[in-house]
Image (cartoon, rainbow, N blue to C red; front, side, top):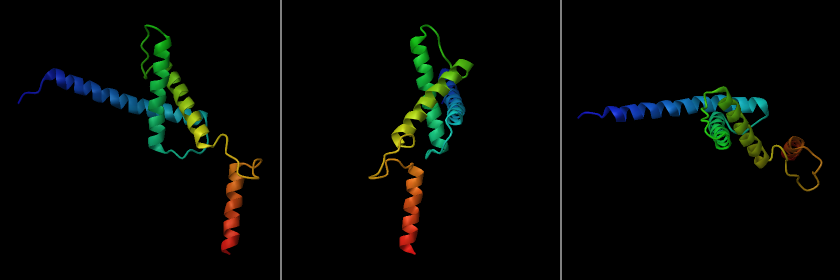
Length: 129
């Protein structure tokens, strides 16, 4: 059974593209997290997906507005736009998760969410003891 050489070339190119996007997405996600430091519930996979999504969004928007120009993720311009896209995704992720603007509980409108969490932990420990 002979395998078509064109099919093998297409498969090799596809695997190469996927690996480039995964590697580039990891770097872009790490760069975006370095720009906006803080604690995130997402781990390695979330950083990777955020970087890939940011790369697609950033490079896609740049290609849309810059007519006739193909933006690749490996170019310096692609890295900058990918990092910007991942930064925007991370910002909205934190905004929706409540870590930028925490929701206030009744009577706690002036307290930071970390202070409320420590106070609740102290109350639970004092009730148990």
